[in-house]
Amino acid sequence: MNQDKAYKLLALQEGISNNEAKALIDRGLVSVEGKKVLIARGEIDADTRFTVEKIEKIRPVFENDDLIVIDKPAFMNAEEIERQFPQAVLLHRLDRETSGVLLLVKNEEFREKAIKAFKRDEVYKEYSAWVEGHVTEETVIDKPIITEKRGGKAFSKISKAGKPAITEVYPELISGKKSKLKLVIHHGRTHQIRCHLRSINFPIIGDEQYGGRPSKRVMLHARVIELLGMRFEVKEPKVFDHFAS
Image 1 (spheres, helix red, strand yellow):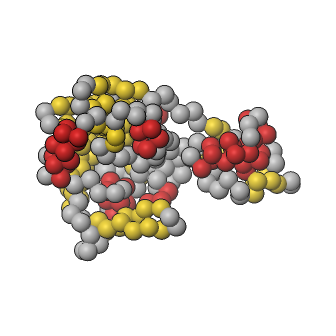
Image 2 (image 1 turned 135 degrees about the vertical axis):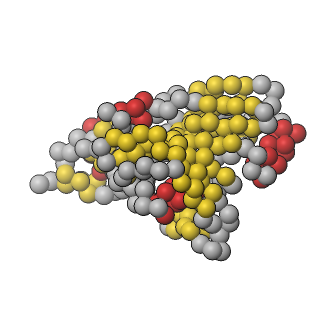
């Protein structure tokens, strides 16, 4: 059977340039039969049909003189969103495939207050996730995390030499062989939830970097942030509801 590079076949299917096709694959938007295409230059059967996810529009949900609150779609880097709001800068970050509440600040005075609140663990951060397996009991994961670079990408692991990190785990729903969780984090280390859930053998679906099975996206959503007396919440994407059916 004839084969060709994935990005070239995708470019032909979608009627786009090779560079545009590479960018779609690199962003994690392209899958085949539910499995994400990971290597743009990988050889693949010439008759392969690709599915291309569409990125939802960036949607501000709140704005005042101090900050802008964004309902971040999956598949976008936080820095990409920051560039679209030149009057503001990122207060924190979410991974590319994580959706949810993202905060940008508009003045230095508020930024300094907010950073102090984050450092003192005075910010409430709640996430939703779908994971492999049945989670039936609440638990608290209190394990220090250290982050290193692997192949140019951040990778976190449990280590006595790491920084303190606590994740509260609350089961919300079981469907088939998977569970939906509410997660409340303290400290907010790089890839904290992903690393912690892997450490108790409940990896997030779609999070192949930390042992999850393939899916169209990492099933992690930043649902709520409470900061300096304000509360911001954004609904889970529709794909989260589909997992329950």
